[in-house]
Image 1: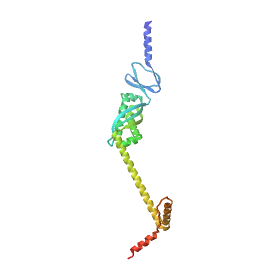
Image 2 (image 1 turned 45 degrees about the vertical axis):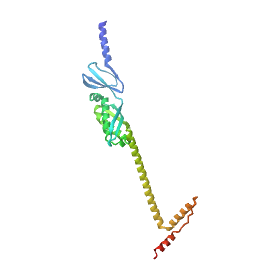
Image 3 (image 1 turned 180 degrees about the vertical axis):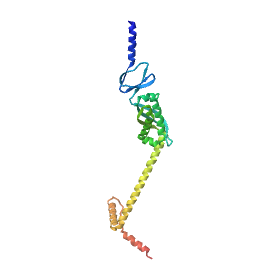
Image 4 (image 1 turned 90 degrees about the vertical axis):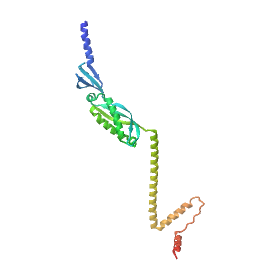
Length: 249
């Protein structure tokens, strides 16, 4: 009885070790005597114990948190930047054969790429053009990890931290910029007003009646106000008479 039981147990053990079931989001990279044989899954399949070996790869998108990196911007400002990278395995064969640990490798290359790309830009660009910087970093990472069977789908810069001294300096710079714009706007307003006054004076000089009507309108506006000042209109022709008398010998 025992003679027949041992082979049955061995056969059951081999069958249990041979049966493999993988879900839809996983693949098995199978090696036969150390050589790549193929990618299997999902579902039910069999492998030969001892002779065949299988490494399981997850095809779902991985969220990789890039730790904070100290970056010196192009305008010599030290900032600390952290980001998040979304990637997934699109070729299980290359992800197992070409790289020892594709997750660690992607994390390290993401940190170096983040520092190198942001170091080429000013602080203002880091704060105002994050979308373009995200696209640049994602493109570089995708090109570098393509040989490993990795697809980087998205990169997002989460936070850009700067020192308190730099925050105060930026605030002073912004205030000075607002004052400069206010002065420019005021000067442009004065210039436009002077141009309109010149045009109005030119139009009135062509018709003396227009100047007289404007003079009467001004007098009417002054009389409507509750003021104690008494204004006597003086015809402009009187000034011309006095000027002629002064020019006579």
